[in-house]
Structures are given as structure tokens and as C-alpha cells.
Image (cartoon, rainbow, N blue to C red; front, side):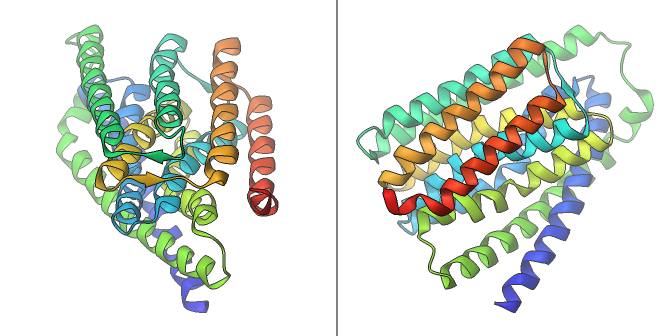
Amino acid sequence: MFTDILLIAVGFALVAKGGDLFVDSSIQIGRALRIPRFVIGGTLVSLATTAPELVVSATASWMGDSGIALGNAVGSCICNIGLIVGMVALIMPVEVDRADFMRRAAWMVAGGVLVVAFSWDRSMERVYGVLLLAGAAAYLIWDLAGVLRARRRAGPDTGDAEAAEGLGAAVGWFAVGGVLVLLGSRLLVTSGQDLATALGVPSAIIGFSIIAIGTSVPELVTGVTAARKGVPDLSLGNIVGANVLNLFLIVGLSGTIQPLALDPFSQRYGFPWLGIFFLAIVGAVLRFGLVRRGAGTALLILYGLYAVGLVSLPALF
């Protein structure tokens, strides 16, 4: 148990440094390519920070553990909004382009609806996993088209010459950050899983709690670091993009590897909370055009209630 705790600490340190490199290099890449930070957050950073969830859920599905495979993806979406957006908003209100946010949020909500619909009978066949993967491909193509449009709108003379010269180094540091995040997240998840298993916690609860939080640490560190550097819009773009990939890519790949079987807790507790957090973040941006500190506090309170339920309510399901 002491070894697991030590490895968890090492994992946090690796992920923290990797998240810092992600933010710095992403900002420089965005300047060099004349891409808005929100778009960079929804593409490069979200792809990199969801790698831990992808690895963990795919491995769990291969091993026949649907509880971890699905709980990790859905739990990460909840953690991303409740814990991470809440903390970022407390540090600095998050203001974004409302129209751009809503377009991306539509993909996120659609992913949630499809996951719920495809697993309505508490199972997800491979054909539904393939359909979700097709949705992930469609999102990435749409996202790439948006990046190209953003570059054209920026014009030929708005780039940062200094950032352009350092583009190669920025890409290199982005890759280094990705390696650190993957290594750190792997330590967090495996050690956290061993620790929870030793305490006799069921796999579905592990997926929604320790593993979801562990694999969301990259988004947490990236989000808090971005807010401290004065670019919270990058962190919100990362969160929305990460949630889209969690639902389409990660659940889709898990269901394609092996059909998923849901337990009642995932369907009756996890899915409703997913809807609550989606409504909360979309409602805040629709009403105010930003996520204020008050909304951040409300998200953290909601996440606290969700976490309490994870501990106290499983026996009811």
C-alpha cells in the first residue's frame, strides 16, 4: 500500500510537469499557426490529454471489465466539468466565444445522448461502438475544417514571427509533455486501482471515481495552469474537446473491442449526473457568455454531491 501511495505521488508530479508543457507549447503553436486558443484547446490539447482515458478504457474492455471501461469515460466527463471547470472558474472567470462553444457543446451533448441510447438495455453491441467511432472521425474532420477556417480568417499578416520560428521546438516540447502525461497517468491509474482493489471497491465505482479522476488529472493540471497563465479559454476548449472524445472515441473503441455490459449503477446514477453537468455548463455559457466564479462554485458543489453519492449510494443499485 505504501508503494502505491508513493507511485501515485510520482504520477502527480509527472502529470503536473506534462500539463505545464502542454499549455506553454500549445499557446506557441496557436500563435505560430494563427489558430485561436479555444480551437487549439479543443484539438491538440484535448487529443493529448484524453490519451490516458483511451489507454485505460481500451485495456479494460480488452480484459472484459466494462465497469472500468465505461465508468472511466463517463466519469471523466463529469470530473472534467464539475471539478476542473469549477476550479478554473474560481481562479479566473472563463470567457469564450459563445457561438464557437455552442457548436462544440452540441457535439458533446450529442455524444452523451448517443451513449445513453446505445446502452439503453444495459449493453452496447459492437455495431454501436463502430457508429460512435464514426462520430469521432466526423468530429475530428469537422474540427480540422474549423482550424483551416480560423487560419484563413486570421489573415496572412497576423502571425507571431517569433512563435513561428520556435514552432519546431514547441512541437517537440508538446510531445515531451504528452509522454510525461501518459507515464504519470499510467502510474496514477494502476497504483490507484491496486489501492482501491485492496480496499474491496467494485470496478464500476473504481471507474467512476479513482480512475476517472486519475485519467482526468492531465485536464485538471492543464486547466489550472492555463488559468494561472491568463488563458482560461484554452482550458475550456480542452474540456469540451476531451468530453467529445471520451464519448465518441473512447466509448466507441471500448465497445468495438468487446461489447459492453452496464451495471445498474452506471445507468441509473452515472448517466443522470452526466446530463446534470452538461446542462449546468451549457446553461452558464448560454446565459452569461462565460463561466463566472459563482458558476464555478456551483459546479464544485455539484461535484461534491456526486462524489458523496459514489461512496454512499452503490448499495441501493
